[in-house]
Structures are given as C-alpha cells and as structure tokens.
Image (cartoon, rainbow, N blue to C red):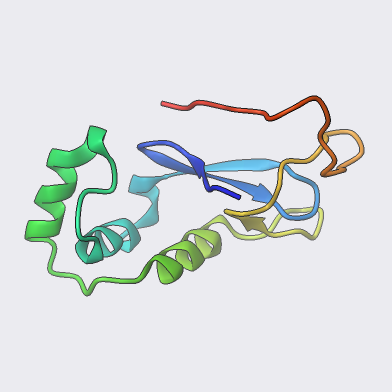
Length: 111
C-alpha cells in the first residue's frame, strides 16, 4: 500500500474507521527537515530547490524513513472512534467501514 499525500502534505487514515487527516509538511516541526537531511536526493521534483537548500543548511541530525513515518503518525494522534491515524491504513467505506472496495482501482491525485 502506498502512502497518501502530495508534495506539501501527508494524508493519513484512521485504522479503524477510515477517516482521513491531512498534515502539512510545515506542521511537522523539524521532522521533515531531518528526513530531508538523510535523503540521497530531493523528496520531490516540485520542491527540489527547497529540499536541496534544507539538506545543505539544516543542522539537525538526519532520521530514517521509519522514524519519519512514526513521527508523522505521532503528530496525527488518535481518533475519537478509538482508532489511530496511520500512513498505511486502507481506504474504508464511510458508512460500513469495510475495506472491501469493488469496481476496480481507485486513483486520487493531489496538489
């Protein structure tokens, strides 16, 4: 399962009810710059100049992809239903919360 989001945010889903939550990269504090610092190249083509500048100037310690994803999920927190926002929770039906999706692949584009 791929991670949702775009060039400027991450899209998380509740692992219980499927409710989505968007978190902007700027809302992650030093998590995103620390992740950028450890990457061998830019995070995305559309932010290449910004990413390169951050990688060059950031004095923070780099973090791994796993640490970055765990950090994003910690920022997102828990949902009222008792579930937890995660980057890899599957889409769910908003009425019955089933993960069974029929009718083919669903593709969403952001940004």
